[in-house]
Image (cartoon, rainbow, N blue to C red; front, side, top):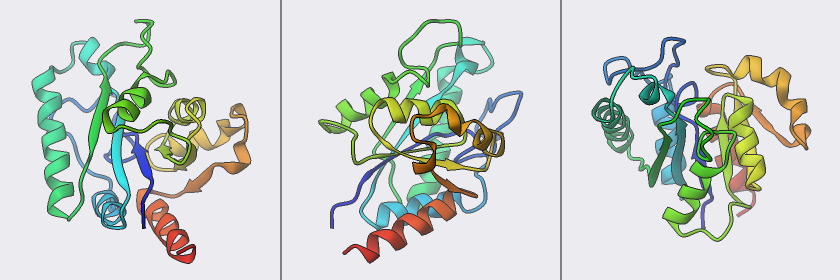
Length: 189
């Protein structure tokens, strides 16, 4: 069985988000069940990548070393649970920098596609807690999933901004998304 590429947002999807930004590995705390969900998706044959806007870098709230420490903590926890992250793409720019990588721009997803050697992202999933996560995925042809953690409860009201809002899988958390996807995959094998 060949799994799908699953692209995850980070803050609010994998870890607790904060209005004052996640600035250190100590502040980086996983949402309950998220690490195990990623491990289970990995073990089910899916490739996991992360696409994360990190404007705290541009704002001078933390540096590249602090971001690397957060990602080391995250990947260590995921690997400890039996999972694997294939690639992490992040945007270091602020909202006014006019970059292509900041979601809803598609640069992070293009980076993941190219880094992992995919031709398209048509059978991939984009999972996030904000409309801009889903807009980036939609622009690249991904299937879309909204988690109600982080800003997800508010984002659910904004889904009508998408071309096909009824096709978005809405889950309470990453764990529920994983349960649904794994159960659905097993039904079709």
